[in-house]
Length: 261
Ligand code: SAM
Image (cartoon, rainbow, N blue to C red; front, side, top):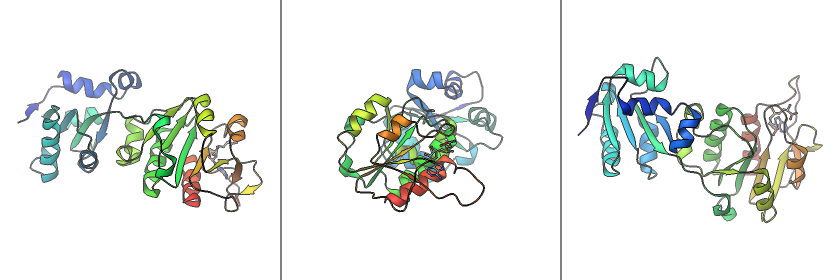
């Protein structure tokens, strides 16, 4: 059913290692997800692995058998690999026993249905993959309809971002849009559009989050640009009581999402 691969120069192993590079991910449209739990969740949501690699530690596990079946049914490749290969593919000393490759899915902006959820999140020029992954996970937990990446953002399918989503990358629609596309689409948004600005006067708890609420978050360094802030019905500030001058982007997004839902 599957063959044992022990060589780092094996073409499949090389191709999976290459997916650490953004260029390779963009060219192939593929990405890596690690861990049996996450791979199982992906399979349950209808995403079959293109490649499934597993080590001795996972052998015989009922969930692995299901993942292998789903991979083979979709004409994917299944290989058993050594611990050394898992470590190299994951770039970790303690790798997960299962590593899989999936097709990236981006949802077109025009396919979003505002009535499908009480809250949608838009991130302008997010830079940090850990922040992005954590936000996707929080958006999933709170039942958001999508995470929209506006402008030049980091890659939601990087290994770091996918790890931080803890599997939610398969559950939340991810959308890419230019600033102009977002501005055009926002003009027909039926609910509230709430931006977040450190210079805002309105406390985030005082704002109206008429459903569906579209929450707009700024970049880690520059914050929300004036153009983006101008697209919002209201811009709000989460009170800062101590010496810190801002919150981490993913923490601020979590507070906003739960205020809006
Ligand atoms: N130096 C940046 C600035 O002037 O906005 C700090 C950006 S902050 C690290 C990243 C993003 O998190 C902000 O653009 C905003 O969306 C959100 N954010 C962080 N703290 C916030 C707060 N207290 N109130 C509202 N939004 C906040």
